[in-house]
Image (tube, rainbow, N blue to C red; front, side):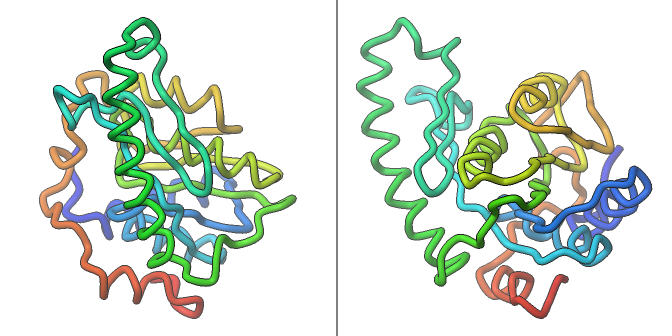
Amino acid sequence: MRFASRAEAGRLLARHLAGAGVSADVVASLPRGGVVVAAPVARLLDAPLTAWAVRKIGHPLNPEFAVGALAEPDVLWLDERWVRHDPDLHRELRRIVAKEQETMVALAGFLHPQGLPPLRHRRVLLVDDGLATGATACAAALAVRKQDAEAVVVAAPVASPEAVERLRQVADDVHVLWCDPDFAAVGHYYESFEPPDAEELRRLLQPDDKG
């Protein structure tokens, strides 16, 4: 399965979620690409669209390989399988986490300058453009739970079985259009995978514009 664009994937995901009876009080997208996917989902489910600032924590020797993630305002999730018994790695990760924390704070200020939306007793749908390891979505789900959300559901057009299994441990439910046992990089599943620019993100996240 390949999608022409994130917008097309979002429309297909929206129809799937509506057909499955999923509802939400808030659709929280994971930037950047997840915002584009989430916009048609928010529109079809008639829910406000916001974005949740997250940052992947990459392995020092391979930054593309996620060993953890940060989620605003204060969640750090690390995959203990990779970091438990390696003090040298812990030292390197502290440096990486500090740098990514600064980036995340700046991103959060851009995404919602008025602060996080209230989530207490609300049903939150977290949407991303794909779930490779599930690290960032896992951190985001834990962060949303700390805001006393009533329920947390994660959705994406495509995911690895590992990511789905990981997220089922922290979310109330997980919905994907395709769980690929031979998962490749997220971009492999899109014909067009250019990241949205700042202007497109602003437009999609306008309170009166759900995409």
